Image (cartoon, rainbow over all chains, first blue to last red; front, side, top):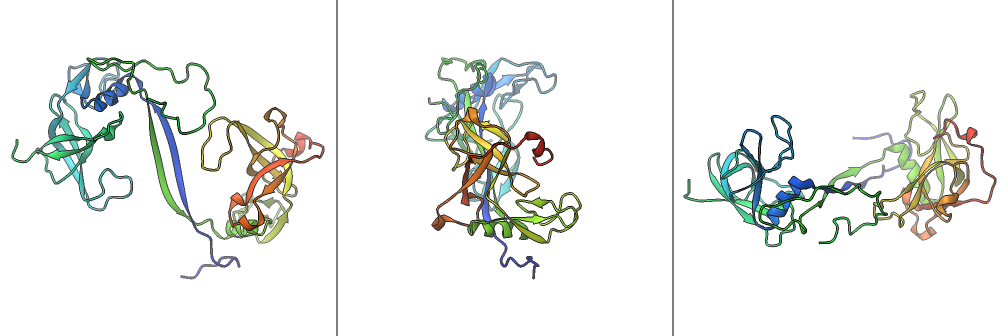
Length: 151
Length: 191
């Protein structure tokens, strides 16, 4: 391919990184969720209809009313949907072939998106593998691992 | 736990801006709860500026500022984009502009960002080069912030000759020029 460059010769090219260093206030609900992760506990929140939403939301997904009752849920759960990542890009949670999955933790009525280290199918049981150093971020859950032979 | 923004310079915010209810974790004291997180988001591109900006950037490597002229009304655009945004025709004639101009707008930056940003607070400026129709973005230094005003005359401070590159960063910053201010009315339409 030839390109008319208007007599400038080779067109310049350079890497360009667009970066937003967001500093987010977490609020009382997400803050409690992240604080719990740091302590190896997972918290949901009770919705207006009594269902447990996890990760917790500040407002009821159906009615929009403010929610306040934090509820601890389990560290194991069931895969409700999944997708495989065969060629991860920079910044994805695991360097090799992995699975992104929706996991409904025991005691919760909604599913959370996270990474599974391994192959799973819908209905499989998984458990949290905690990060060695936890700092109050969603990555304090290093990954979910399949529970083999369990159901 | 240090504040989440401990690795960048931030001048004080108005009281109350970061205040929020304390998280409460069942069975835990609230005083060490997570209240802020850093959530960096970035996208890496391979950027090609195109023919006209390439001509402009190569000019900077030679310490020259090259604009391009609107073929119909004669306005000089810098940095050039290769076409006139007013009449929609390609610009064809290159025009060398001086590295002096007039401050057409500015703001005082209180939150530092970018690897080359000066210490906060500093002045981010638009400079209307003499002979140009539109302003160029830059940083204004060497003057107390409270003395900065629209219409003041400024001049580019370049990097050392051996550091010149086809990059906008070949202009380090702008500094005041000891000349009378330009009346604000004369800057209308040139922001």
